[in-house]
Each structure stands twice: as structure tokens, then as C-alpha cells.
Image (cartoon, rainbow over all chains, first blue to last red; front, top):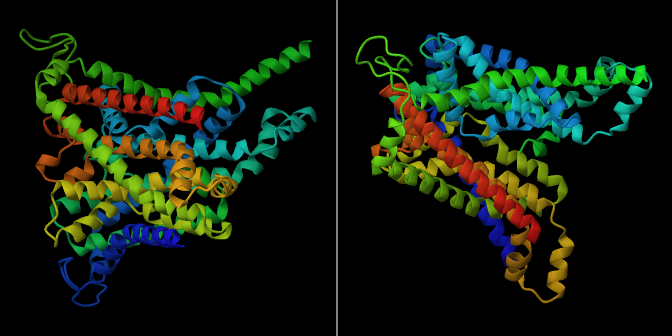
Length: 258
Length: 283
């Protein structure tokens, strides 16, 4: 009994460690003071400042656009990669798909920077960020789709083939409906990863384009005002909605995407 | 016969139609850039950043290939020191994450099944808020306490950002343990401590290993947390790489540092894979 009490208090401390800092950010976003130091009074002013900040709004629009396009492309390519990894033993594929997920982000960021400028002679901007986001998202989608396929009965695909379905018909009528929750969870995952990404965007955006995380970064570096708290709070709300949607859609991804 | 052959070619066609596009995309935007980094690390820096040409365009210009960048790395202890510091911070972060995660992962794994999903979701939720927001939170907390811009702040930030990477694999492992094993140990007279130390802990080693790799590797390349929460003394490899590419604009030197970091990551991944094989053989 004494041991379970110990376990409980250690776990509660861990949950507190996870949540207290975020609660502090949220609380101070409503504080009527320029300093995040002591509570003065309740206000919505920082949200008003935020919605009048054109640079911030532009960055938010860019973030959403980049996330929409990159997650759609990455979902198509990642689903293909996940299916290919499940059905065939192509030696290079797992290496190519999983390494970008596992390596430190900065390495992908700087290598793409050198590649875009030195080899493609591309001006950094929307296109370079899009390509970079697709590159790091493919692996996550592939992992989720493959996990979904791993639980499927192989005889379903064989039955479709034996009944004369072409590969495309098998995919459209059998495989896709079965893996759809995984594909959608992958899409949501790719969307969240894209809208949240800082490191890779930082190296591939140049001066051409700003995103929400880049904007937050420059604000933190220059001057800390509760406007950062306000935008953080709204971002938390957005991810909260996405996560709840993802866990409703495919409860097993909660366990499989680790 | 002809039918079987046709079916064979068509299935091979399907295979490459499905695997081809992601393979081509990743070759272009992951493999090729990675290989170019190797080449860039043996080039001279360009006059205005980027890389110098391979062939001199005017007399006296530095051009072609050189091992100078690697020479600089191995001739000055500063770089070895920063690498050692990065490995130290990564190791400390991993240990602290492990110590904080274990009780929570164990508690979730031993909770009634209907509560587990919710308890896991509670771990994932803060982890889903933006990375910079989570770092910023510690700026607000540690600032008034006068603890900002210190090694302590860097470690706190690192642990905070990477904690779920340890909790989730640990929980996934602990959840699979058969409770019968603990009953058996109790029947054989093992006390609570012995049941943990001689049954649960050894069985959880694969979970500990994958969690450790998931924490150690990203910490090794991190530049934002030392930059935001640390002082100048707390710079890690990631900060040096960032500075080489965007500050001094010495791309070949930055590429060399990236290659050295990759070597470090591969070494850690290799050790983890080797240890995982040993653990599964013994368990």
C-alpha cells in the first residue's frame, strides 16, 4: 500500500511538471500587465493586440497554407510508402522512410538549405518550405499506415485478386476503405507536425516567408510580451481540437504512433 | 503460362508504381542532400558565404577539395569540448527523463484498462502544444526566479520538451508485462523491492532503451533550447552548426560539423541497437 502511494505522488508530480508551465502561459495571456511576473487584473487586450498584428496574421495564414498542402502531398506519398513497406520487401525503402523521422531535425534542415541553394539554385521561400515539410512528414504517415495494415487479414487482398480485381480495384474497393482511419490519422499528424515545425522551417524559409513558429521565435528573441502568451494559448486550443479529432478517428494511433 | 507471366509483370509494375513515387521523392530531398553535405564538408567556403567554386575563377582563389575543415576540428580542443558537453547534456537529460517517467509509466500500465487511454492522452496533450511555446513557458517561470540563461534552465527545458518520448515507449513496454510473473515472484517470497528490481525492471529494458534513444538523439542536435534558455557557455553542437550556416556563413565548416554530429548519432543508434539485441537475448 505504501508503495502505491509513492507511485501516485511521483506520477502526480510528473503530471504537474507537464501541465503547470502551460497553465502559467495561458493564465498570463489574460493578465493586464506587460510583464509575465505577477497577476494584475483580467483583460482580453493581448488578444486584441494579436488580432491587429498583421505580421502575425500573415504568418498564421502561411502556416495553414503550408500545412494544408504539405500534409496532403505527404499523406499520398506516405500512404504509398506504408503500403509498399507492408506488401514488399524493398531493402532501401525502410531506410529512406524512417531515417528522416529518427535523425536530429537540424541535419535535415541544413542539408536541405545547402541542396536548395547550391544544387537547385532555388530562392528560399514558400516552395522550399513546402518541399521540406513533405520530406519530414512522409515517414510519420507511412508508419501509421503500415501499423494499420499490419493488423489486417492478408486473405482479404488475396480474395479480391482471386475474384479478378485489378490492383487498382483492390486498392480502391478493399484496401483504402480498410486503412482509411489510418490515412486520416496520418493526415492530421502531418498537418500538426507541419504547423508546429520550427527547426526545419527555420533553415529552409530564408527571408521569403514567415510562419507562426518563426514569428513566435523572433518575438521571444526580441521582446517577451503577453502577446506571445495569447498566440500560444490559441495554438494550444487548435492542437487540442486536432488531437481529440485524431483520437476519435483512430483510437489505435494513440498507441501506434509512438 | 503466358497468363502467369503477364500477372507477374503486372504485379512488378504495381510494386514500382506504389513504391516509386515516395522512393524518388525521398532520394531527391533526403538522400541527395545528405550526400551533398559530405561533399560540402571538403570544399572551401565561398567569398560571400555558401561554397567556393570547384575550379578557380581567378588566380589565388581557394578552390577545389580540402580536408582543412576536419583538420581544424581535430586540432582545436574547443570542438571536442563542445561535442563532449553535448553528449553530457544529452546523457543527463535522458537520465532525468527516465527517473521522472518510470513511476508514471508504471502507474498507467497498472491502472484499470478503461483509464489507460485517458492517462496516455494526458501525457500526449501538452506534448502537442508548439515546441517554442513549451520553451517559452520556462522563460516566464525561470525569469523572475533569476534562473534563466543557465545550464540548469537548459536541462529543465530539454527534460520538459522530451519527457513524453520516454514515457510513451516505457508505458508500451510495461503494459505488456504479464501480472502472473509478479504473483509468482511473491509466492516465491520476493518482497516489493525485489519484485521490481528482479522482474519488472529487467523486462522493461527494451522500453528504456527505445525511450533513451528517442530522447538522446534529438537532444544531441538541439539548438533552440540552449539559445533561448541558456547563456553563451551553454552552446551545444547544434548552436555551432546553426552559427556556421547563418552567422559566419562558413558552409563547409558547418557541413563538417553536421557530418561529425551524424557520426555521433550513428554511434549512439548502433550502441542502442546492439544493447537491444543483448537485452532481448537475455530476457
